[in-house]
Amino acid sequence: MNCLISAGPTREWIDPVRFISNPSSGKMGYALAQVAHNLGMDVTLVSGPVSIEPPSGVKTISVETALEMKDAMLEFSETADLIIMCAAVCDHRPQKKCDHKVAKENIPETLLLQKNPDILKILGSQKKPGQILVGFAAETHDVLASAKKKLIKKNLDWIVVNDVSNHEIGFMSDTNEVIVLGASDEVERISLADKSIIAKKILHVVYPQWQIKAP
Ligand code: CTP
Image (cartoon, rainbow, N blue to C red; front, side):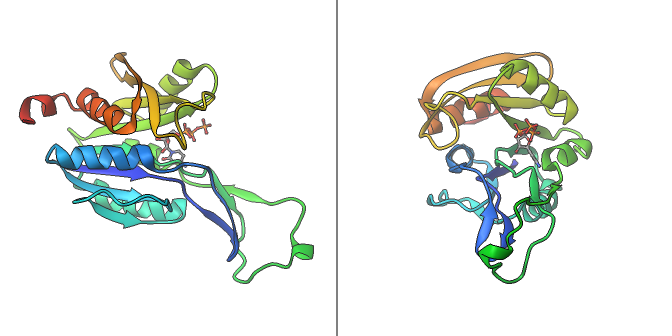
């Protein structure tokens, strides 16, 4: 059972000393990777820059930008049975990255951006038979309806919904509370708990066969 997980933020460089990013800590993806490994899965973790220890026994690939994350995810998705896209990928990158530090008086008032590829959507468009594809959704309003749209648009089997307007949960916190939506309209609510407990419950929802096989 090959499991591929992405985690953490991406970093989109403006010049060698400045970047655009987001506050993702990587904790949720790392917890998923550790639990999947403990359940006996062969786990590859593709991680953006984070400051937490890599999970033990997990092959961890470090990337920085969305484009690097895309390349790694597409490469390892070829042999993955279960893919969980937990990373907070920056939707945009600066149109131009300067090779040298730009002096502050030369920084333009408006930064021109270009769209990054939607990695999950690409994975959904080339999903292999039997492959299970799981996305995350960070939402602040119309939480379930917005997540359901993403599930359909990206051809997912499951989407794990975070309400990021609540600071007790999500991004930087050690705890989380999620709703897991399925392509066949399943709705599984997982109440506030440590991210390792949430990870175990998510894996049991998206891959129930595992409950039978796991000791
Ligand atoms: N995602 C991705 N590539 C991107 C952006 C997002 O693979 N360029 C993935 C995330 O890892 C997550 C899912 O898509 O699993 C949903 O991410 P989210 O930020 O909630 O939604 P977006 O699709 O970016 O849409 P929006 O920001 O408009 O809500």
